[in-house]
Amino acid sequence: MEAKGVKRQKVDGPPVHKPCLFFVYTPDPPPFRLLDLPQELRDHIYEYMLAGEAIFERKAWEILPNARSFRSIKYGDGGSGVNILRTCRQVYSEAKIVLYSHCDFIFTGGVPNTSIKLALSFLKEVVPKDARMKIRSLQFNFHERILQNGQTTLGDSNNEAMRQLCDLLANEYRIQHLRLRVWTPQRATREMKWVIDRGIEPYRQIPAWVLSLLAIKGLDRLSLSWAYNAFRCFGRTIDSATLMRTTMLQNGNKREKTDGMTSRLRHENNFIRRNKERRLSFEMDIDKNGKSQLEHMRRVKVVPDSECKACGHYPSKLVGNCVCGQKIDSEAVYDATAPKAKMPEEVESDQGTEGHEEAKDSKPWVQKPLTEYLPKGVTEEDFNRAKALREAGYRLHLGNGTPYLGEDTYIDSDFGDNDSLMSVYGWSDDE
Image (cartoon, rainbow, N blue to C red; front, top):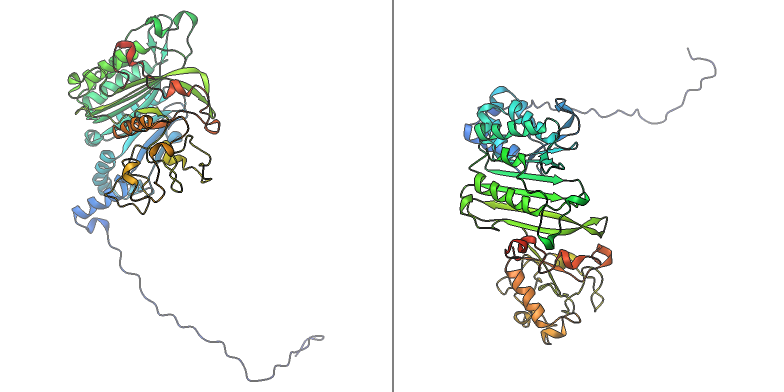
């Protein structure tokens, strides 16, 4: 019986049958347990997931002991593999050694000096005792404050925390590479300013935190980055760094005065321009064999191997256009520590790029003497000097300045030939 008012649609032609789909059921392959693999393969898997370029970093954004809110881990391109430690007890026991022996442990503090307590808490309470000897690289950052009597403090209970941390590292750990970043933020008062020309300092005591660090010995490598604001205490910095190098580093007592050290007064960078006020910056990086990875920079008038690939002229600034209209490759100009890093494709790798003369046969635009391609006012002697500095391992910087990069003021003293403070002690400025 049809409802009133409902019309039935008339369909012409044979009935349409919808196709039937049949699915073939294939059971999933049985799972293969990680622990069924040989130990050697499991170790390779752990290294692949945990070793990589992982960096374990803990930031103290809140007051201890609320550790969960400021714990973070950074990883390289491989992503996070630390979750494998949560699989089971056996996997954790096997993989933790790889984690602690291959990662760099960095402790930073959003609140000054909370990184000291954070490092102490983590190394004392979190790291298993059977893995403590596996940690190889450690870094922590902190601030110091100089009192009016010349003594230093890390503030509140951080002095005691520093002592406990150093004792813990000395007795229960075997750190190979220790990196310290120290910041002395307060500005100088009138009676504590230091005039370099007179060579006097009001206070020159070794900081108490340095004496605590001396408990750590036998390092393979020691790195120290120490910066002051307007408070220039060059003598205490050199004395402290020398004492640390001699006591904490293997073969440290065999090192000479400036081995692995550099110290300069640099103008502060405010956005993209340099301010008139200068800041003391000290760096030390040295290993037990006397090798250092410190970067030395020198101001030059021309950078070898930075010639325009279209016309062969050497640029006189970091940005802009060449005389032929081509855009200047600022990266190639600024950093020329690798002499063969910017070779044209048509030049064979065994030909090298040691200078203008050697490139005559491989670059069609090289038809004139070198002086024809140098910037105005730059001589062939300037070119050869820059080439010698580059071959000696210096990083080269075009010192004429460009407003775009904020290098138009105070640049000469930052990248000059005598910008090192070592000469105050009669040491070589080249260091």
